[in-house]
Image (cartoon, rainbow, N blue to C red; front, side):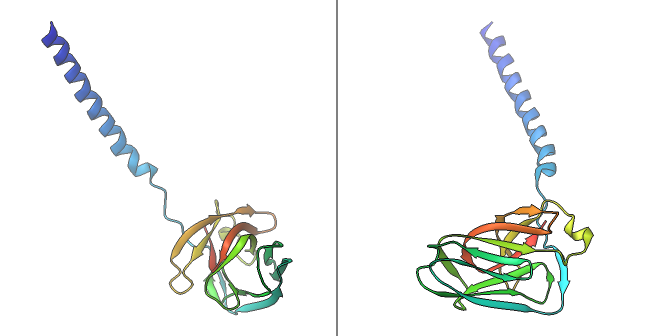
Length: 168
């Protein structure tokens, strides 16, 4: 009787293993999320603005795109430069004192206006902001964001400055 019980357990274990393998094999193909793609919103001309922001904080805006720096995020007066480059993508570049990378003492809020995007692009969901390599356009880090379809803006927080782009 022990042999039968042992054999029965072995058959059950093999059957369950095969069933689990079959389930996971067929499910993996459907569970792999698609790679994000940059939102296509061509603009031919680069726009730039800059402002000196002190330790008391401030806002730098360019059209509907802005960076809000709270009091205490900077230890000294800093020139913040906001650029919407000529590009096929909905991207921005934010620099502090013309450095390619900059860390704040606390998070800042950035709002990107994507109202220039065609309706078919702007309606894609879910939209998120990505930290990008401004030269290669490689996606480096998903920054998330709150997408407001009514105002055609997406807002996110970050502790560092660099290039960012909207993706879906």
